[in-house]
Every structure is written in structure tokens, then in C-alpha cells.
Picture 1: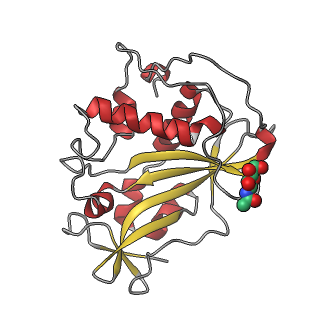
Picture 2: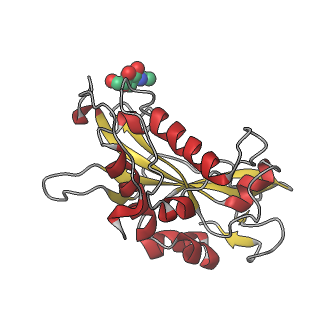
Length: 227
Ligand SMILES: *[C@@H]1O[C@H](CO)[C@@H](O)[C@H](O)[C@H]1NC(C)=O
């Protein structure tokens, strides 16, 4: 993937008051737009038919999400920057009217800015590395293909057990988000890498015991087996 996909300028970098050792892992959160747009009717149209990024969230050692760390690093989007890849994989799915955005570009940037301020500031990464790492991890797996086959295929295809968040639809679960667990770099594996999630249960996906929905309109096979 292109490294020069975004140009994010760092105005001021202040060394954080916490260290890498305070973090345990990251969660890569992917949105399933069919589910998101069911819950948020004003969402982006046409509804993307593939996963989009929601966020890349650092987790403290004690298991809670690391949020809103003190930082003077501000995101700035250069006019000429190539943001194609980020716009494609990490779009704001909120409708433009909802937050008063003039265009999708502005909505996207506000979304990235929010994610950076809330989560990125605790990541110990500079913005370019932070966003690039999330895109790389998303692109490492083809979740859409895996999901078309079956939920258990996510683990089979990717090798990693995800946490799945659903919203209730006619008593069943419609997929809303997939949370993938990411380990910090270590001397042996010096990159951020996907791992199986442990000790976390999927949320609201067990409406009728075995099946969850991918779509309300049967765009893909409506039911997939949950194992
Ligand atoms: C978890 O750890 C962080 C950072 O050390 C701390 O700020 C937070 O209060 C802790 N949360 C809980 C629930 O203990």
C-alpha cells in the first residue's frame, strides 16, 4: 500500500506523559455499513458494501480503552495530500446534514480528527504512522469474503477470532461492527499485528442462537452461521 496516501502535518509534538508500557494492545474496529445505516437512517448513500474503518483504539494494561490523552499534536490535512485510500477505507458514514458538513471531504476529516483526538493521542504514534498502521491491518484481511462464507470463516480465513457487535433486527443480530485484536510490537515481531481476541464476548449477536444477519435486504445471504 502506498505510504504517501495521506499528508498529515504535525504542528507540535509533545512527549507523552505515559509510556508504551502502559498500553496492552489495540482494537481495530471495522464497521459493517449495512448495520450502521440501519441504526443511523441518515447515513452516507449509497451504503458501502464492504467494511469501513471506524477506529484503531489503544487499550490500557488494565483493559480499559485509552482515550483523550494530553497531546498538542493536531491533525492537518494538506490540500494536495493524496487521501484516496483513507477516504475509501475510513469514510465518515454519518449523513452530511447530521453534523452540518458541507461535503464528504469535510465530514471525513472531522471523523479522522475525532478519532485522533479520542484514541490516536494515546497511541504513542505520530498521526501518519497511526492512520497508516490501521489501513495496513485492515487491508491484510479480506473480511468481506470471509463473511460471505460464514462467520466461522473469519477465523478460518484470517486466523484470528474477532469480537462481533450486532444490533437487534427482528429478534436476530444484524452485524454492526467487527472488533479485531492487535498486539503491540515486540522484539520478536516488531510490527503491530492481528491476533485472536480472548476473554471478550460478542455482543447482541445471538438473537436466535445460531444465526446473524449481514443485511436486512438479503443483499448477501441473509443468515450466516455463528459458531
Ligand atoms: C486503567 O489504567 C489507566 C492508565 O494507567 C488509568 O488512567 C485508568 O483509570 C485505569 N482504569 C481502571 C478502570 O482502573
